[in-house]
Image 1: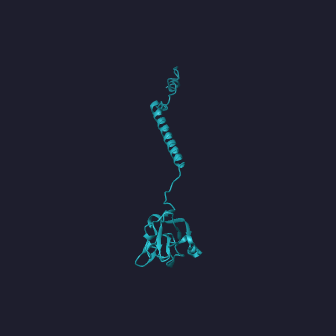
Image 2 (image 1 turned 30 degrees about the vertical axis):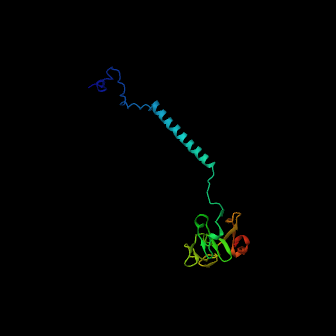
Image 3 (image 1 turned 90 degrees about the vertical axis):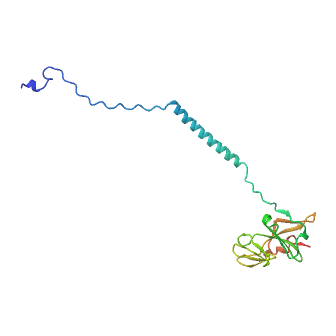
Length: 193
């Protein structure tokens, strides 16, 4: 074999072959184009969410403009005629709605608060035992509101009481009288009959 033959066909006068190109790679995927309808549906969704959030904000702002109103019974109320309450009786008609007991003794009528002076529970009037008994911690009060048992630190409070022009009892819960301050002797704390 001659030198020319050993060099291959390129040496024999044939043009050299082009180097082999690497296998063609898969064509790079073209960027996905969002269809116009899909774009519009996303925009619609975005605007709907924006509109909903604005509506919620407007509603909250409107609610803020109107204050919360707590409807409470009036602080001053009529409690009927004095002869409706018997001597020695505790009238519980106004306990639930107004938080007041009307008590009549030999001298007249007074209005006691139904709030325990210990922690603010509502005592019950026990007719058989002739005392107010608090169910929370066992505080006890005599009929006139003076404390005698349990952890309560002081007697029940009294409210201002008077006779109206029509002869009915008027109780004013805006004015309170405390026994330990000597206020029970105030003429407004007791209705003499």
